Image (tube, rainbow, N blue to C red; front, top):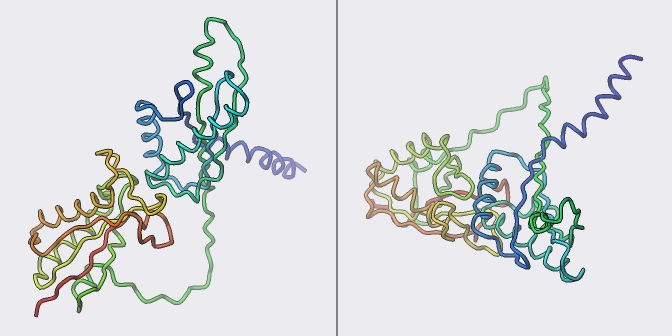
Length: 284
């Protein structure tokens, strides 16, 4: 009986545990506006950058207005505010597939605490609420039976050492970028150095470095959070280009190009934050 009671208590407590893991953020707007003011955009981008290492289950975006104005006007304005936040997420490589709700809720009824605080209260009601729900921890199932080992897939350095022909594409699968930035993740530095060392030796090949981004609308490029320019795919390709030059690869053998989000791989979004090279010449 005691075991059953403990089990029931645990089950009742479980939803509260998961709700505590939700990440929330609020963005505030000027009166009658749905454009994001610079200070609020900076806060939002900082919030988005903190999501890079989180396995996200869903994102909900809810827009609100203060109590002034007609009901229809407030519903439209609150939806426009929610849409504006969704656009920022998309421009900064957060997949739209993760955004489950983008809703304008209209006005928030005014709760009067002190009359002199009315302006402040209304200001706090002109907002968008963002709720990010992480996925629950994965349960790893250990099986006694051993699966047959799959053939080991060649990595980029191995491919570059082999026979190559014009038009061959080599994807740098282990070179990952931080969301919204052109710099690679720390764990990718060793892999990139190995690729550079091979390219220094392979003086017979010329190639184009192609940069890509994930999750933007209509194949657009993403915004580089460091420079605020919408050229992140080009910035990633240029970062790799400059790295290879520092490592000793002749710049005459290379060019770099940003391809925006024209060629998504269709898998994990982080794999679309990538670079690859296309062989343009192979000497004898």
